[in-house]
Image 1: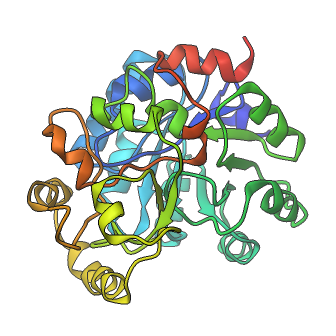
Image 2: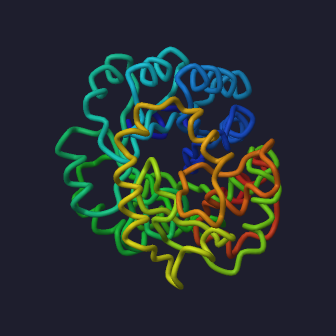
Length: 328
């Protein structure tokens, strides 16, 4: 039985697991109700339980996934995913191996995001049920280090018969067809779903993406989680990043030094830090601007976006996005 059959997925399309409050039940539930796979990103355990449950109520009989960032995941997050009825769990930023047995006992498949053949081999060695293969063109925090078109076939050659979800560069039906023809089981779209009416992205954030002329791969917004990320430019990147997104060594070191401390903080700490960040001070956490934040937050928080932002020109409903991607 393949992944689509196992979780009851109608269309081979998934919404990426975006955290920080930008995805709640409204978006994930709408995606799942349309026959694709909606995903709740990392929140507090209580909030994850609530939003997975609400998404499932909005999409009766349809699967809803959960995405967990390994450095910040605790047993309570895993319990929330199980109790709320998540159809599968994707771990990002590590394998999450210590929670595999608990999830599998509950009948929940476990996937891991990888961005290289070496990462894929390690994930397969610890017994994942599938891989999310992320290309460097993806938005948000990047495991990917090379284009998806080059990486996906090489990971497919490792063939263990496991499902591969392809992330990076998915904005149109032709992108979905391309990755499925290259061996993917499911195409994963992030930025395209970020630019929907159900997303909780700040309206000015969405407008910046719609009018973006370039994206940057950088480490600027790494205080608390020093993983490379792709964003569109704002006042902070213009002040502190070089032409290709490079930052000073001192900024990278500040991110690394903060990682251990940040993992002990509650999920709400990121929003608190966002309120005190300033574009002229090079200390930026991974928070993104969501509805309810002041307008100037877009110039001092991370405007995560994949390269597809340069091809997307409208904000539509999640159901319409699923229809566009699936050609239905």
